[in-house]
Image 1: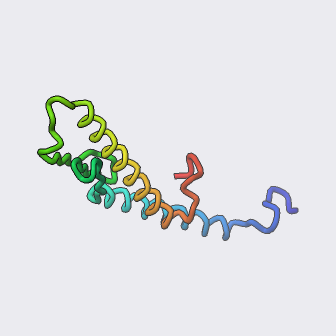
Image 2: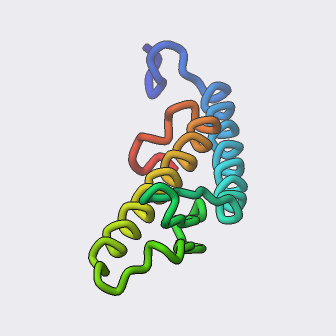
Length: 115
């Protein structure tokens, strides 16, 4: 191995290419994050009695309640259905973001602190 060099011929040219690829990936990820703000996922609970819409940024955008699910004598059931629908929508939003990021990073997105 040459003094101060990298083993296996990992020289300046390869390092420059790697840096260019990383910069391109960062730009694509930033663009995707912007796009995901406008994309939404929908989930429901109680056979469609509760429907929620969440953005790719995990912001709750909409809650739809079917009138027949609103029972003043059973508020706990309504609360449970809303929680179930919101949690499912958040899981779907995570899945959407992870899938799209995986397309860009080729699986490297799971390395903490990489981007």
